[in-house]
Image: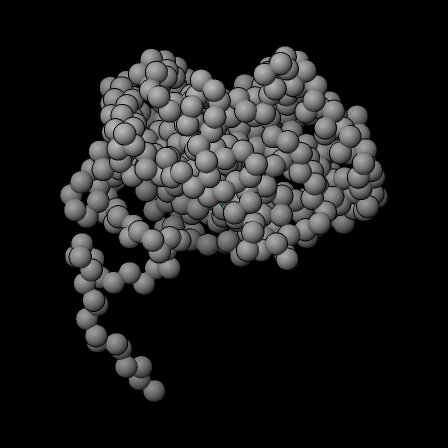
Length: 464
Ligand code: PLP
């Protein structure tokens, strides 16, 4: 039988692009068509060039073109294009794992590579669950997570995500075995008469009481983002927070899982965001993604401590989880090249230097604008939180659309930043994220800040 091909010419849209057959997330607006990228900029099909000041959603750490990564993938494809990693390994996967884990950060000594952050979260949740089964304590299968958190969009990852609008259609699927505690969000969560120490103590007590209420025999792990990104906007933990959470977890025999999919792999100027946290000794399980492959390929990972691995290696000897494309050689080859480039060019040094400049210039240029409430972050991972009345700490009402408008106006001025993504919980946080590629120059940082100021001033003018 011959299949008759549809010869109907594609309907041409206003921008000259054939009718879109992609089911885009939002049907309210038509997405601009990106046709190429170079350095920290990308170009649309109408010829406009945009500075990507958020590196997509904190992904494109090397910017939008890097011939070395393309060559590395080509070399890999020419020698071996695919291997089913359930039964085989490859040099590409082994070399990437060895590179990421070379100094066993915080005792993390084994890696699983999958394809997206959400898959990494699911794998991490399963790993923690299986660990306790192998350790002979199968009742430890509940999780504690934080409100207004985001760990991914698959059903497993959503179960531990506090992001309300992403969960709401799927409530019947959401596990009852997850309990949410307050995030560490001093700007709005700390009482005006509460000292830093009292605030920390309150969060510590809440976690401990939650564990005791559920029963430590029933809790597998506490999962949290080291620096929450999309839901709260780049909020670094208050000093001592991670160590305090670690102490409570250790006291009650609970695993600590850190999600560094967005904030990790160099964004803070350290390879892992938790390395900025004083004497914190590291998590039991950690997820990584986004800047691992820099967006050249889909790849993410789960890092596990030796204790987790040993329990499985000495027990059933099989992780009850896997995907067709896990540890894909092409993806691993690309990610390894990205990580080598970061190391060889000392891009973490650039993240630290340009991050200091970004903080200094944003605070100098933007702090006095009428709706700028809080500028916070680390390295090149920053957010601006907007408030209706910053002095009185009055937030914008849900649906105000302030940050959406900032994103739109910025795009019109040639600047890409990331806005508030839906309704995330009790605190309505109007924010934008600025997390440029690690290769950004001094002049480009100043240009980003200049455009941010122009954008926010223009949005405020509209409201008058
Ligand atoms: N975890 C965090 C902290 C994230 O920010 C994201 C995505 O934004 C995810 C998990 C999910 O990653 P992905 O979109 O690659 O599935």
